[in-house]
Image 1: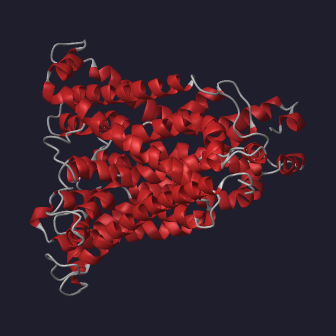
Image 2: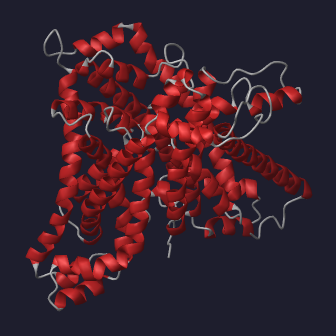
Image 3: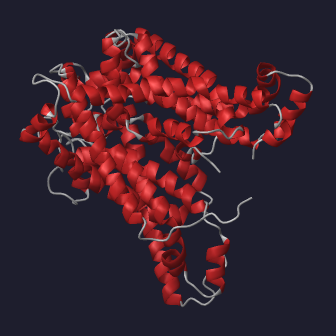
Length: 291
Length: 282
């Protein structure tokens, strides 16, 4: 892997090359780790001095503490839908000639960002939007369906931005599975469905767990669409809105830091749950010998 | 695929209808995504659009009014400044770091790798608030430098992780040869590595560019009135949409979309879309 064998004796040279990593590490330490630790320390300060005051205040105020449930109630179903849709679609399209075009189309909403998706959904799903007009003339709905400024607007924006991400990740996991394994199964007479259940799915479990965690973490920190497409004062007051308001409307930085830490903690908890339950399934190489 | 030479016709039919269902869902999703983008574009050209399939007429005038109303020239200048600075610094810092990560084994390498992976896994909202607090204490928040610093947090690790496999593809004997002829690390970089890595550097730079244009949370948390990028300005206009004509908000959205899309399409010429999310290829 490394060139050290050919450069071995010149230990000094090796050290200098390793030093190239220092500016990057310093930057991450100063702008990522230090602020995080600073925020952690700040979250323990407050009017009553050093302690858990901010955390106690967060959990004893229902208006604040229920944001955790609100956020979970939006992000968990959205993640399940995203991963649940992405798995069969990635499986069916993995060797299709349209796959490259499809992936390109799906990358677009991902990079346009949540603000544009929110604005687009506001028009498209609005009471006079194309979707409602279509539902009305086909008599699929008797009156316009309310999909904006409520739970569904935020949910749908999470699907639009989250599904492509889950799909592209799963696609790369799927294409990394050694094709000799399902071929062997096919030789022994396994149908496509049985190949999927007995070969692909067990090998995909670690990848699925990672995709679920990453999708969930993204959905859990939903912010702009919860403000623009939801009802930020009520049913879609997610935890990032609470953190933002504490920091930039109340100027209560210790409280804002505490909420950010609680947010990170909640995400970590779900991630740990998913990753530990993964251990119950097959663990081992899925790629086989590649290249 | 040589499958199913023993499957029954019923199984085959089930498989085909299953595939059909999956394709139907895919088609519906793509159709809706295209429709929501089209809705923004159509509305940005509409004279009046109330209760009909298409607007009464089309006009380009919302673009000029959006341009003056939202002071888009100054917003665009800020956006270009921020994006170029972030791309330049993240490449300058990230490419050498990626080289060291690809070529050397050292103590605490796993810790360093974790440090580079974490900012990409933790959502910006979580670390953005403490970061903004620190930047406010340093009187850097609300300035362009503060916005650039905040955007470097995900950009540098992204460059490191995208560039590492590119470096690994290069034959180490080329570097050894340059070393034998007495090239120092700097000359090695300028004359051997950078020319060989150019496609990778271009791809990483373009992806950082697209990601920085679209990065809402970090810029939103650290920007002041004079240091907003396009996406944050767009958020504020959508947020306060009631005051202004919806069409000029959408004209701004289309300008934003166009700036991102052009660069994205260029980037897609160099990288497989799957690499946008998987980052580390083995």
